[in-house]
Length: 251
Image (cartoon, rainbow, N blue to C red; front, side, top):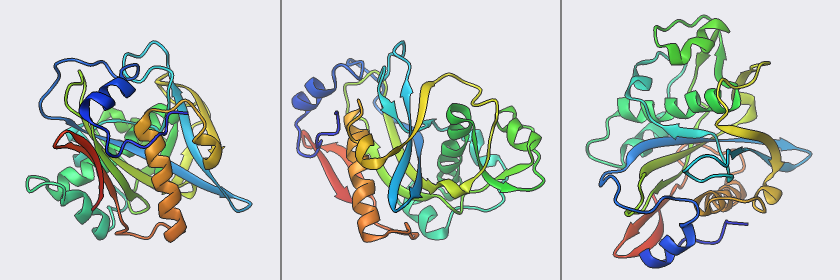
């Protein structure tokens, strides 16, 4: 299991702990926006989460179990939606920076939806007419699923520490399985994740995970314990390196 707490680790301790998951070295000074979608389901009172295993050939977190997700494309914010983010969620994502606009907040949320299609073959949205000139969203139009963001909840945020070849400012968003309008019978168009499983959250924490993923699973368990329905505007843990310590605080 790789879900040990990150909180309080020094830069040297964190580099040592993650040296097999992340390529260390001079990387970008400013992390790139990214988003991840944590899909949740309940069965007989037990909480399940969708996870996939990254190919061992990947330089970034090879062989680790993760949630579907990836880098934000600025064009994601221009794709029409059937329903936008709840205002409380949009405001919380946008509050991260004075330069963060609501359009950028929507792009981040949309990238989580797009990555879930690309890596898991699941279309998040509502049945109905939808058209776009963006080829990345062609399967939504082909299957008459309009992307929708109103069921997404801002769950956690984590900035990759300095000293990595790749750095991301990742927003972890959550949604219930009922937000999936269609599971493509042919599966996802990419092989980013070579194994996709719905697994009880308690068992998920025993998988081979990046440390941040294990910490976010703990955050899900905590959030659900105080807010079983994931209401809008809930508390969001934020992980970042400050003064040579990796810290967690609530936003």
